[in-house]
Length: 217
Image 1 (cartoon, rainbow, N blue to C red):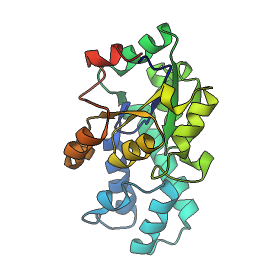
Image 2: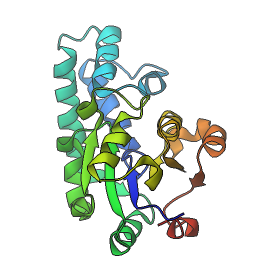
Image 3: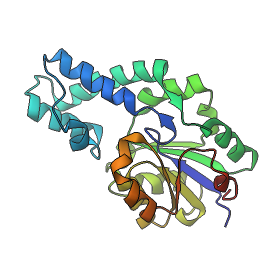
Image 4: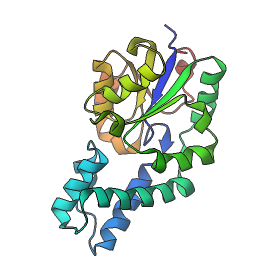
């Protein structure tokens, strides 16, 4: 079938941005006079930013509240996003193909707009998305399909009419459970889950130049 909508995660899916979070981790822990703890990235991978801040406060004893830590991270990330983030291979062309074919595009992310908008504006693709939804808007993380369902609803579509693009197994599994067609996007940060992603998602792609994508919309 042809899908009427595409819902995109950002980090590691539409954007080559996971290196930003590694850099922010290094800079933040350096500000505390510490190295990034072993296994830290894996420990916070599936958490919301606030949950990650609470976890970080617990292991570091940082004086700031979890909300204040989030604010520090957002400022750091926004700066790096504006300067250092690029789109995945073929992503910009694919977004324009969707627009030309009348398919709607939405964002479903754990990030806040002040964090990612600088990158979208720099890349010239902000206007290609009809909706932008964060897990903060729905109150639950990507272990639940709420953020994808909200994006579909705002686009005026049913889950069955949309494809969700994700790089993490949690997101793919969650979106699939709600009736979305799922497309897993390869990213180095989720390499350990590649086998499970291939088995779970409707389609696994290396990047957005995959010819099969053009036949889905």
